[in-house]
Image 1 (cartoon, helix red, strand yellow):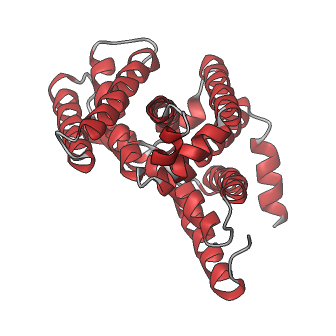
Image 2: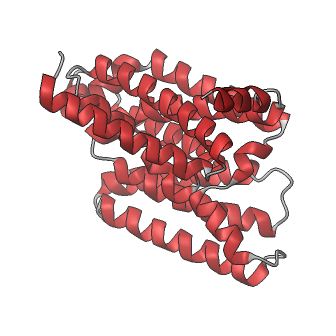
Length: 283
């Protein structure tokens, strides 16, 4: 135990580890706040679909040699989030079918472009790192950290400021519309915010594991708590703790960051599930 503590103390002296912890905690916090709404509205699959869109956009940005890929990936992902929302409302293509089309199409296009135009000698390794996460969270620049902090603070402030509206739209969208709430606007806001979170989380866990940051904290909190506020607060605390533990374990043990965080989330869910079975839910 003393060896682990001394090893952690040594690593904490490096700025890249501190940057990873800061960004990881902020991403975990943001994803957990919107995760409760997405799970309750049965929109969890949208996060998965948008993560694949972000992968395709990243492949295009890499080929076009953008110095800062987020400048391209972020607007493309937000645009697709809006398209998915509008398509779901018009019902010409059912929501789950639209997500499946965009998700599979983006993955295929992204892999094809990386395979045909990549300048790297290890295309398979690049694709695997992009999908399942890599050490990129440990190579963040100061600009990446500042941008992540600004976007994360914006997400948290939006959630706090529009909390009551998001609550109303989450539980009874029809009633919210009847009382004058512009439900479509707040659904659009949620879609845009989750797109921002997904782009931020790509460096942390990779495209295929992003949904875990959104789903596991919310589902875990729902095993123990009943009210929307309690679930949201518990989800945020759960997500931040799991992200911290996952990153620290990854640094010490040399395991993949994204996979380690998700495994910690799974272990946390198991604990909350058993707690809910034994003690019941708290109002």
